[in-house]
Amino acid sequence: MSDKYKNFNDLKKSEKENCDFKIDYKDIGSKIAIVAPHGGKIEDKTTEIAKLIAGNNCNYYSFIGQKSNNNRDLHITSHKFDEPRALELVGNSEIVIAIHGCMDEQKDEQKKKINYSKKIFIGGLNKDLIDKLQEVLEDASLPISTDQFPGIEPDNICNRATTRVDATGEGVQFELTRSFRDDGILCGKFIAAVSECLKTL
Image 1 (tube, helix red, strand yellow):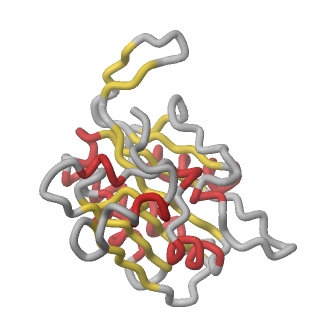
Image 2 (cartoon, rainbow, N blue to C red):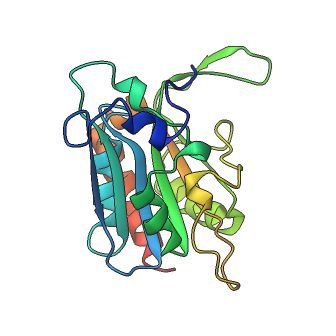
Image 3 (spheres, one colour):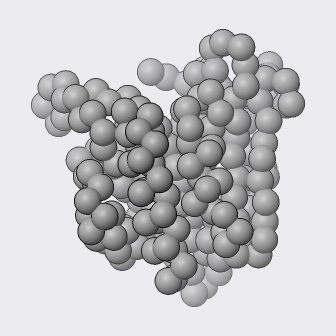
């Protein structure tokens, strides 16, 4: 499904902040930022998950859809997401972890529909951190896969951290299926595992 708006400037011409959407963020000076660019009613529960992972240890941002209907209109795809406060926050961070929500049913490379049910998909350009997080989540007996949503576009919000010469800007994105997000026990295990892993960085 294509987006209604091509970028944030296009969106704000028709949608009103603190009415149709709001922005929640904090910069505590951490090197890690947890972001939910499609939060609120756009991709349900991603705001809450991102905020809990960030806790008091990481920077945090969420673009929160709060229209009475048609919140999908507020979706700006990750490699075009350019809301200024988000870009400032990720630019002040060395590592970005993006939290997204997806439908249970996805298509494989042959366009065949697969119902993944409760699943975590991990992607991004930070291969070392992806490997580390995947191992941690597998150890927690959580259903994780790299089959969908590679998140390898350099302009993806998760890959737009600081451009200091000693930092790559490469990050990680999680796509959580609806059934996974609706399972409080699995979400709790996911939040705890990711939070503990990030404390070691």
